[in-house]
Image 1 (cartoon, rainbow, N blue to C red):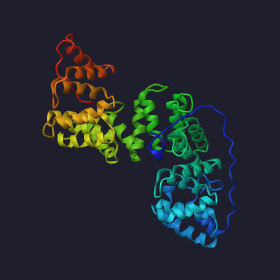
Image 2 (cartoon, helix red, strand yellow; image 1 turned 180 degrees about the vertical axis):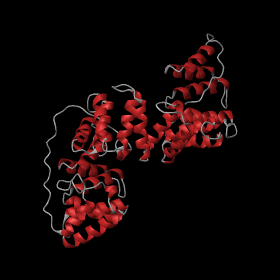
Image 3 (tube, one colour; image 1 turned 90 degrees about the vertical axis):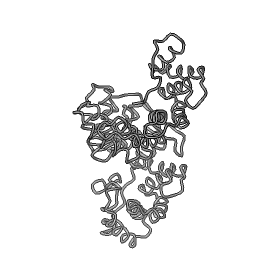
Image 4 (cartoon, rainbow, N blue to C red; image 1 turned 120 degrees about the horizontal axis):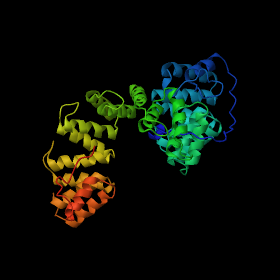
Length: 423
């Protein structure tokens, strides 16, 4: 998984020269009202407030808004108090009250305002999207040494949001935040190492950064490290610990953890097979909109494994997954329309969804397009076009397409069933 702002989850590591950013000194406390506001709404990454600060979503918004409103009455020109009060409103979901305070606090250079408001502008969260200004604010906060802004600046460079995409700069800013102990940044840096983006490909370093974030309970890192162990990247496969890590993430409501744990349960890898529990976990991830989980759950409904067989339910899930970009689901949806399962036979719709997958170079979709044109299912028979699709699929090493192509060329063994679904 990559950084939170864009649903990416990343983690990386490599030896390099540490950045030496000057951290702003914490202002002198102005009294009990100021202290009360800081205790409720300061960030643990602000210099001087490390011991009392908290994550945005851990703020007791009612107490914070009350304390910071009172403090701001006494010091109406304080950028810090404005930033903290804005953060409390933001945590409550009241962006209308938060935005003007963030504007004023950002103008005063308060790092929380620079970070959160910069993110809001970048994503259009509660304000009109302005990626360039968002990146400018994030850079100001990042250069001031604020970890939240540094991680977000890494995201901006990672995805090219408001700045030209630059993986080296992304890794640089992730590292700056990671070295301050920010778990999301540690996970993000780990992914950079895992993917070799902006740093040398280094699975050992990736795992090391993931471990740091896992030690702080970060769900993204739990999933990322679990995948490293599941696939044996840079180390031996350890399915038992992968299961443990995915379960930790799943218990936090992480949809990737839910889906990955479900897959291992479905297949009995590293854990006793339990398809019923797998179905429940796929459902939880699907409820959060995860296209892959919808595809996986649809397979269970189509086959009647762990759930009562329900072709109509499978069709709905495949459609939602395909619309979410999961091309394996598009393949299977095409087959349901082709075979009349959960729906009347509809070759027009079968062609639509199968072609969608083929256009994305999905090997099984390419093979199934060959089957459609070979047999004239809703189209005129076109053996030349069928061979072309089979060849494109065969070029990916898909064996059924190889067999189908050989059969059409007269050198096969009479293979039957020229189409198949995607698992």
